Each structure stands twice: as structure tokens, then as C-alpha cells.
Image (cartoon, rainbow, N blue to C red; front, side, top):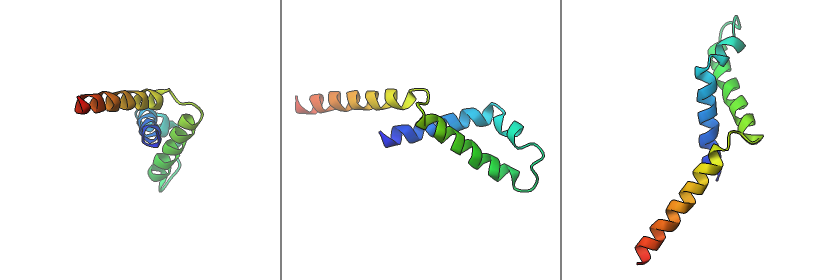
Length: 77
């Protein structure tokens, strides 16, 4: 489940990045603003996922568990 949560966190971070949120948060921040902006966005994404996120991690995890079960059934047949 940890990997699914990490995937959702990265996905949310990319959504925030391409929404222009980082540009709005770091306008006129000066030297190092881009690095700070990237870290800040990833931390926001992590907090969003910690507080429930979009439910993407749960869906990914369920699908992987279902796929794993069907693959085990096929190999035992």
C-alpha cells in the first residue's frame, strides 16, 4: 500500500505543478525559488494524500491485489 500512496503523492504533485500553482506560490522569491517550489509542491502533495487524497492509491492497491489473486489462480490450474 505504501507504494500506491507514494504513486498518488507523485501524481498529485505533478497535477499541482502543471496547474501553475508553483508559479503563483513562488513569484518574486529570488535565487533558489525553483528548488524551493519543487520541494514545497511535493510536500503539499504528500499532505493532500495523507489527509485522504483522491482515493487513487486505494484503487491502485485493490486492482493490484485482484490481479495478483487472478494470476495465482491461473498458475495453480
